Amino acid sequence: MFSLRMFIKKGLLNAVGKMADYQVILNAASWQQKGVLLNEDLAEIDAAIADLNRAKEMNEDPDATRMA
Image 1 (cartoon, rainbow, N blue to C red):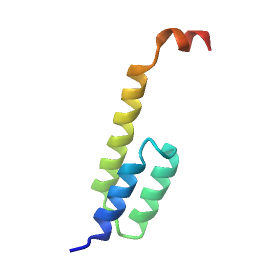
Image 2 (cartoon, rainbow, N blue to C red):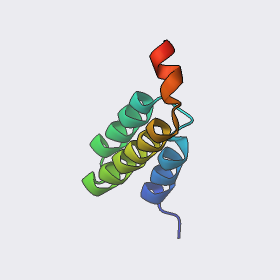
Image 3 (cartoon, helix red, strand yellow):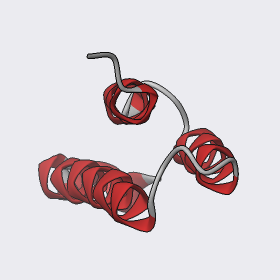
Image 4 (cartoon, rainbow, N blue to C red):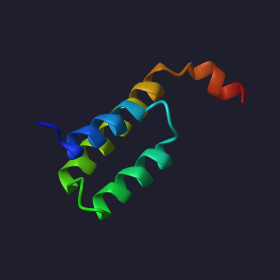
C-alpha cells in the first residue's frame, strides 16, 4: 500500500547531500506542518544531515583549511 509519509521521507533522505541542508530542512518542516511527516521523521532527517556533515568534516584535509 502506498504511504505518502514514507514516500516524502524517502525523497528527503535521498536529497541529503544533494540539496543544501536548509532546503531539506525547510521542505521537511513544510511536510510536518501539513501533517504528513512526524517529529520522529524530522529527527531521522536531521540525523542524516548531521551524519553527512560529520563525515565531510572528518574527510577534510587539515592543510587545505589552514591555507584558506
